[in-house]
Figure 1 (cartoon, rainbow, N blue to C red):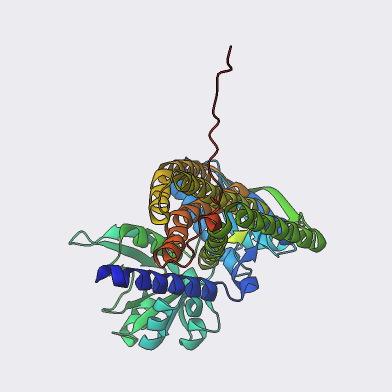
Figure 2 (cartoon, rainbow, N blue to C red; figure 1 turned 135 degrees about the vertical axis):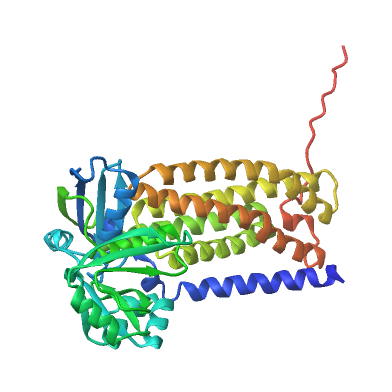
Length: 438
């Protein structure tokens, strides 16, 4: 029963995968964004300075500064800013399509604005589940009431623990009378927090609060730390020094980019033709599998909101080469089995089995190398490592699963039975050595 359902089920899953990938990347020009080197933008490098209160720049301090900067940059409305750690005490901020680095400089030096509003439950619920609605100043911020308290009137906020040991946020107000009146007049209503007009969180007012208050719920320690930073109006924990500030022009102009894309398409076309000429039907099936592979990788870049850079494109092209190389290893094995006299079914089964170790080893070493490069690299190096890593993962999946499915589908149903169609039409020539008569 399973054998009868196996192929149809695999076919349905594959079609669903292709459909989902195609849907996720449409329209592609709006889903995958170009990096600084392809469309230009602004770049600044920041130095984190120590203070009396923060004598050392730790990883936590660097992460806090990164979060504040990311939140501020997002208010520009630009697509996919890239913030990278440089060493242990610097950050590199790259904003594609922003043509004025002075605008970015000014934004990063400004203080964030914290607002408190009384929100209807349905607004808060939607903001909690819909990030786009929460971040839109015409969304949750507009749909809530007026500002009832400001960040300037909040003295401080810090992470802490409740009586039962659960993480909570403790805060102190500057104007106890005003906050007491606010909490008394809006008892059991939702007090929502907005940072730079973007929704952060909501809490139900459960009692009259004057000087000291707490926010508790199902929080983790990391969430409590993040919320404490946001309640502190996104203040930077340490001062910043601007090391460099640049307006970056696109490395490739529009005409050069088009030529590069055409060259890539021509190169890919030659590879597809080569596979068909050398391996006949298996080559054609591998080309179809390669099309699925490209869709999968583009879908990943789209869903992950990746920024495509020149090094990223290089990693993409290199991983395509890995996918073709895997098929070459497999098909050569299949041809050897056919030359050895194996039946078509046996040749395909044994060929894939014997080639798997070589294919897996080559892909695994590339995956490990790309992973290390991503973890230790910075800037555009990460883009190259990211596309190479996932491209190689998908290449392995395509070679051993999708191409195998196509081959089994053809062979098991006797759609093409000629060995010549599988690139093994001739016979394996074995040289014969004869001794001359003396």
